[in-house]
Image 1 (cartoon, one colour):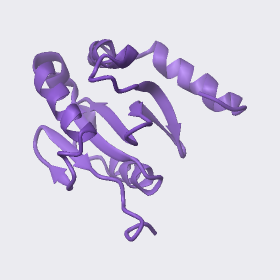
Image 2: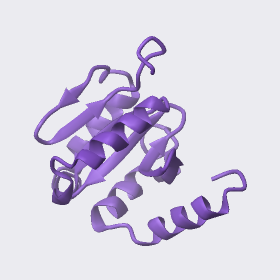
Image 3: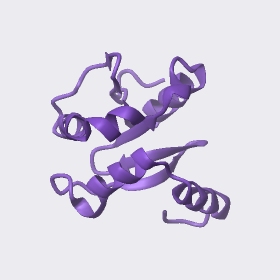
Length: 137
């Protein structure tokens, strides 16, 4: 992270040290431009939140959720905040990263390539595209 916001830098570093198995395995696939040449970073501050993974070039956030995230209103607010800041949000399940990583990576590539361009809410994935200039509040 660039800039002089030391509390956010410190918090991002703390979050990177405590990542779970799914985040660790997904990071192995995303780091070093391994996924079709796209650069991802971990724990990027966006507003008051930290994105699990973010691709600045595509304004895409990838969140890895455990079962504790099912139906949480705080996550909806978090998604709205990130969307309002120009970021598309893709939420995938922790278990899917561990058990169906190829499918998760295919979904991330679809979002990066623009093949996911509409709101999609399913049992196993949620994609919320960033608001276009006409939709922003």
